[in-house]
Length: 157
Length: 414
Image (cartoon, rainbow over all chains, first blue to last red):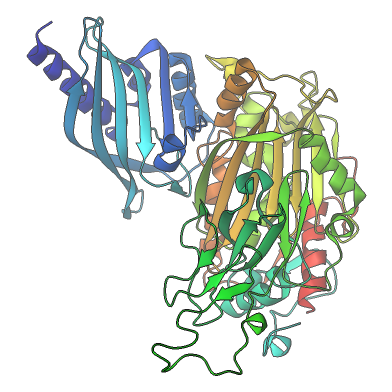
């Protein structure tokens, strides 16, 4: 496959993903993943220690759908949004069906009263399915630079 | 031994001798917070320090805090566990900067004073001076300057420490029922699956009370009722030790239980929702006693949680009167097979900072803290289930919260 085409597709996937979250179209968020996906939010210390537990852990698209349903209809929290800024995306290990990519991000949290904080910084470590159009995540590891999470985490990163 | 000045500290006045009125200023007063550091965290109590498995080998250490006081826990060459202040006796510098590590001895970076793993001062740089000039006076004796040891005790793989020689031994402190509750969950060698820290924008006691509050669970955490977990109508109960400070609540798994309470009260409960992927709650009765939820608290700073197959130790680390760090250690067991580990990881979504049935506990204390700003002259009411702090065979009660204040007032003496 043409590397340039793949790279453009990967860039588009990662940009569309954060747009979806930041623009509060969370019902579309699970569609960025294949059915048998893996989504894990962990921290650098846990990741480096090889600890498998995630602050959020999904092993299927259905589990992502449930995250959104719970957020919309069950969980209680102060309204807030994120603004993700994704840094340069490195695409590596392209083969016929799968690409690997990593990128850095920060997420600013904007509370309903306008207060803004740097909520998270970290890396996305992605395995991406190239057989679907648009591309989808097979695996997205969100490795937070800090093990500290302020108050709660309900909107996905 | 109270530190100089601590015996003259005055706490927030209480409106009565009962346990049902909690003056709001206990959550907002910096002086009260200071008094708690002396009389509770450095008082005749036992605080959770770390897991024994985190300091498995000689030389391993963990740097942590009791209240806000920095302490080090070590494993010495003979296999013993030691704890002492993380503060050089010389100039008060922090000895261990990293949270965890392994060393042959403890060496202060500032002036190179060294201690062995039991806290004994073994070396003073240039003790005899340089070229026979300077150095410590001959009267200086290293053996008079060891790090003051804390008492330490281990129970079911949990390491506790106490600053006070007059604290009862750990087993008397906890009482047989609470020890039974701990041993029920930690009944075999555990392994760490993960850890994280949740920063709570509130006084530590608001979280401590929250973990003893069986009343709120099915109301604030509507995920539970929505997906039929931990209903008040499920058989269960609250066990509170004689001091009031420690407790555990249990609920058994009973999907057939009526939710008449909710229908009658008209509380929000959306029964239409179903999980797309119910593996997040698919659990096994690993203890063979049908208990699906056991929340156990040890005064002042530890919670041992079994929610279905999620096992976690949470440690409360106060960071100022209006900020608290909550350290989560998620556990499995060494005999878990792959399927069991995967089960625990999936159910891990229920708890922690992003937990379906826990995330609200991260914000609700902050809401209280904000409401109390310059509006804290009155008292809160904790009368659900009566006036005292006795064990009860039901959970729509605030008895364990009253127990917390019973212990708290006995220690703070106000």
